[in-house]
Length: 323
Ligand code: FAD
Image 1 (cartoon, rainbow, N blue to C red):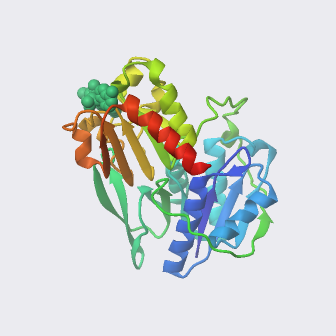
Image 2: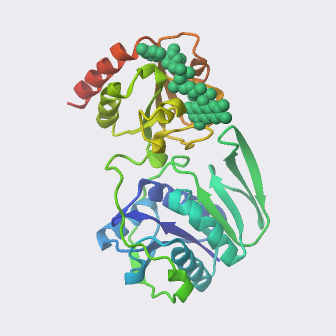
Image 3: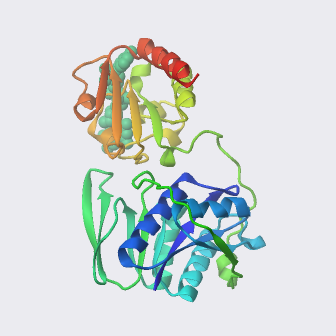
């Protein structure tokens, strides 16, 4: 019995959430006394694959096949399940990223495994029964799920488990997948990057702004603050509804749920529907000119004041700190 951890890449570079999944897999392996093996699908350099050793994983199975160069949900799920079967893995771990959300239930169905999607902590293990915590109802509550099946698939919420550095040598083993025709019924012709900015669901810092910014013309300072911090930008629903920002940036009950290490909310009142998508953030900083704004109740740090005065000062301070 062993553990298989799927490692995601973007254009050949392993993602930050992948390092978290690797550390999580290593920690689960330490709990169960098993070994964890990484699985890479797609075109990833040996140098990049060797990085898994920095997180305590000694072996990578590499699937580099022309048909799998671009991410195809069904095909990748088949490969993950096949590799898990061939190595006798009873636990598959992946990130609950955009692609992981599509893969996890497919892999679980193919393996006849129990699924914990959106896990936020290590399992509590009692024989074959594992208890795992996950956020539910748009991060409003934490549920503990019990997995009774021998086989388990765990999709780890990005930013919920710290990637811990270790140093072990890595061996890389090639695997040639047997793909069925319907695995490749979807063909990705082209991938167009919508933006070069940090991806919002996986960002460790998010700078978010609301209607307090008055209009789209005032977002330059939000972008600048995000750039200085290496952060992703987000917004409240009315802001994207008004077309000030793209809908992809809308966070909350009806938008994306994010769980960064740092969420900076600027000119956002903190309505319950907004908080639903951001309250799992580790540290929340609120900048609002109204001391009674509800967001302050959930803030770790609050600045009462005018965003148009405070944000430029923060930008200058962070720039000075970096230099
Ligand atoms: P406002 O409520 O207008 O707040 C603006 C804030 O900016 C105020 O607190 C004000 O004090 C402050 N401000 C003004 N000027 C300044 C300044 N110069 N400097 C600093 N602060 C300033 N909302 C979401 O965000 N996400 C969702 O997913 C979502 N889903 C919803 C689903 C449903 C079914 C419903 C009914 C609503 C939903 N909403 C959602 C809307 C939500 O209820 C709020 O209306 C919305 O979050 C408010 O956005 P806001 O905070 O940007 O604007």
